[in-house]
Length: 342
View 1: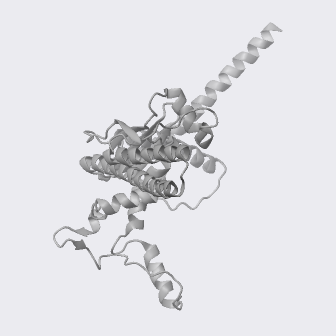
View 2: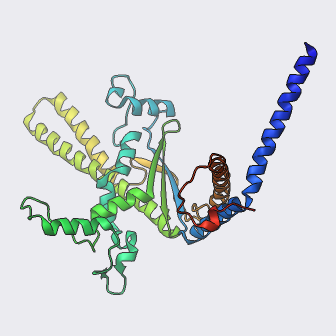
């Protein structure tokens, strides 16, 4: 019985060695084809990576302002409970201060209203679409070659179909508008929240390192202006309403309560005027990056090397399979790449 097991193990080992030898012979027999595929892919990847524009990333980290006298745990709980925080006994804010929940700050940073204000306030369209802006004439370049095929299709369909009287007015394809700017910002601005640390990370990817940091600052300033403006607007509405109620009420106790509420609204308006750390604080301000974030050229070349090697080996076995089974396959590849290596 022992001799039989030894014979079986020896036979299995010999078969494995033969199979591995056969596999190596197939690979070695098609070594020229594999090397061509690897060489072409790696060189093409290297050329493409060198042509690609360098992208620089500027980062910033902000956190909501905590109510005075509250702990980090209480602030986190208050932001999770939202309107129910008062019922749970957690103070959301002290008089004259405001607390914007973390999800609301994230939503505002991603919102069109804040980004639209940013584009208009700092006139970012000529920066975002620099290739379409004529700096000398201070105007948009017109009549250039449009490479987007959808524009040509839309124009052809519009010429054939009758005009729709209810259709919105078509914009000039040569002149980008706010909607184009918002789509561009969607590509270059990333906002991520860290619930555990109660922070928000903002990254801006742009070909110009200085502009990447500047736009990150612009976004934070616009968010601050929006929050302070809304706080002052709401406080003024509340103050006017309370003053109206004060004139209608003669009860001393109620009038005293109204006076206190009016004082809170005035304090809110005063704090909003200061702006600094009103609703959020900047933990890590954006800085001008000194190194590119992408493309990662070395990683691209290494990945292309392994992928092309895998593809080349696969094609070698595929070609060997076709030849063994006498299968004729019409191949449109160049003959110098596909032909049998010798």
